[in-house]
Image (cartoon, rainbow, N blue to C red; front, top):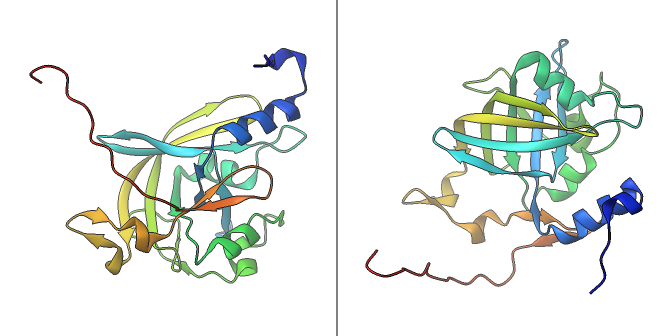
Length: 202
């Protein structure tokens, strides 16, 4: 087995190893608003759950080549709010289109043909077409160098009626899409259950 030392290769080569190894990655489709009220929308695959009480999610947003913040990061720092949506098979093409490098004055939602709906607990709109949305208040921002980490407390959940049964989401109906490497994505394949082992008399 080869050993690859991070300090002996380029940042880009390290990035390729990371995104090719940490797979599949869920995709957060994040909306935010700027001072003029323009809705920004972008997908992020450096994303996951970090706490349950209170419920929190995190995602990391890369910076531009010159080190400046992207629109999503700047908006969240200014407004302290954002909305995270689940990326699913029905919307993946539109969400991918929203990753376009549009000017700050142009809403990616409009370019992608998606619909903004007013939020209930935050001023940031959610996306009508997405099956799950989480309205978040910024809990913590951690600059990491080339990326900025955002942790948000989830204030409200929106879940499409047919997806939830006895408080649980039906993964088969949700059809989430994950990010792999390069231009590759993954859909849910074989699903299986494993019971957690119990040690001794626990």
